[in-house]
Length: 315
Length: 209
Image 1 (cartoon, each protein chain N blue to C red):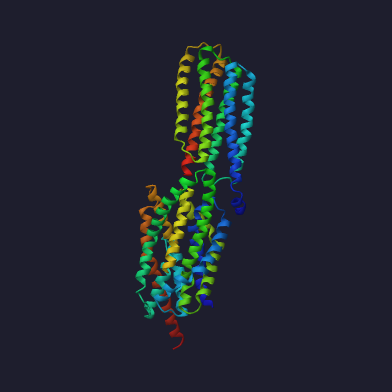
Image 2: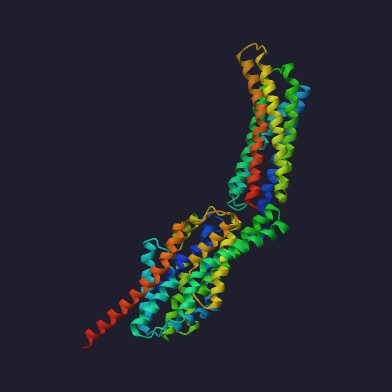
């Protein structure tokens, strides 16, 4: 069972990092207290993981046949890649890291099946696009409805508060449902865990990351998006949650950070504002290439080194 | 805390709104008392203005405290506080004007102009209350903001005329002249600050749309 440790570490770091995409704006602006935010995030991540987590595990399972040691190295390589790219300030996606690691190990063992990869890569490309489209449409529709029905400033104030909490809870649910496959999906492929056990363990490790180490990232990310008004902040989180949920139904784990960036662009398009710099989009593009390649190379390298070490030990 | 906020159905916000409404109504009363006091030379009314300013100060403190205790979204709080501060600045200007009025005798050559400004000050403060209530309902503010600007422009025109007349007015000494100058400055600055407060309302209206 010690092989699960790398997955638990990976889940913990994913929870610490990605929870910022959900309640970051709410916490940084003081709309939601940090304790309330992490409590809601942790609870709904576990619920989402348990309810819909196994949906994305089948896609990862189809990419290659992985041994239990391979699963350990995949999660370790993905975790290390995310940590390194985060230090280099390149937006890294856990999904891309895990897929890269699985393909890397699969290519080394000769069991990689690249046919489902087209679907996965297409989903990665469409994640920010879907985020932008969702936020644009939601903004237009909800704004029109609110302007006709809720005009009082006190009611709007209450509605935005409830909206941010609801969208955040939905975002946490979607994060758990979509991203738990990244954390423990490889162990299901390696037959170390059943999908239910993997969802439970993965959800708990993400929740642990949210509860223990998310404050710093949450405040930093939130302050970067502070110029958003409460309505736009609500729309961005709602659009991100909807994007993750849609891709969960497709069965592909995607990046919550890239969904948020897309949603911010969509809100900017409504007001004809430039909310995201081209350099940010360039860094995302760089991350798309760097993350899977680096994780794949690292996972393959670790597996190869382990195999060589095994041969030396048993002549 | 979270459940309290969810189920209070905006109790804290209601308190802030009630206090701000009271604050602006008090401003209306102060402007009206100033006008009546100046019209009839009734110094008791002018002294009443000074008492109203102290009352308004207490209400301003209650508003700021309620806002910082968590009423409204943090996004709206700075604008709400700035609005309350601006209304309080109007009270400060009225107080200063009232003090100056007590220290001097209003020259007959500018009396009518000053009374007209005092009348417009009552109207502009009424318009501020109308704008505030319209903002709460989410109604259009454009016409109300425009009305405030028109009153402010009228007062500015009267101010120019008063200044022209003041130059040819003999004064007995420095302090008489200073009191008269401060009185005119105070009386004409009220509309400027009300206009600032009206702009705050417009910003709040736009930001919550």
